Amino acid sequence: MMDIHKILKQLPHRYPFLLVDRVLELDKGKTIKALKNVTINEPFFEGHFPHRPVMPGVLMLEALAQAAALLAFDALNTSPDENTVYYFAGIDGARFKRPVEPGDQLILNVEMLRNKAGIFKFKASATVGTELACEAELTCAMRTIA
Image (cartoon, rainbow, N blue to C red; front, side, top):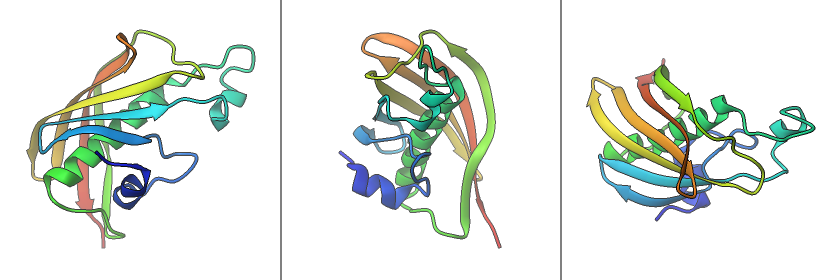
C-alpha cells in the first residue's frame, strides 16, 4: 500500500529514528496497519541490552505514533512541510505485554478515534504474530510554526 519511498515523503524522520518500513493497509481517516522489521542492526540494541537485546518500549510507542502520523496526513490529504510539526501530546494506558527482539516483525495497528482542531486521538497496538507487544491511546497534535 505504501512503500518506504512514499513513507520518506510523508514523515520527516530519518535513520536511525524512522520506525515504519511499510504500510500494509490504509482505510482513509479510520485505520492503518504498518510494519517495522526489527533487526539486530538497530543502534539501540548495542546498549539495550548487550546480553539480551530488547526493543525499548518508548520506541514501540514512537513507531505507533509514526504510523498514526501517516494515517493523519492521509486523512487530511496533506504532507508535512517545514512549517508543520506533528508531535505527541499524550500517551494514556500504555501497557507492554511481550518483549520485542531482533528478528521480530512488529505490526503497528492504529485506529483514529477523533480529530478536532489539529488534535488527534488514536487507539494503537503493536503485535508480533498473534501476540500483543504493546498498546496505548495516543494523543498527537499538528501545529503550524512560524
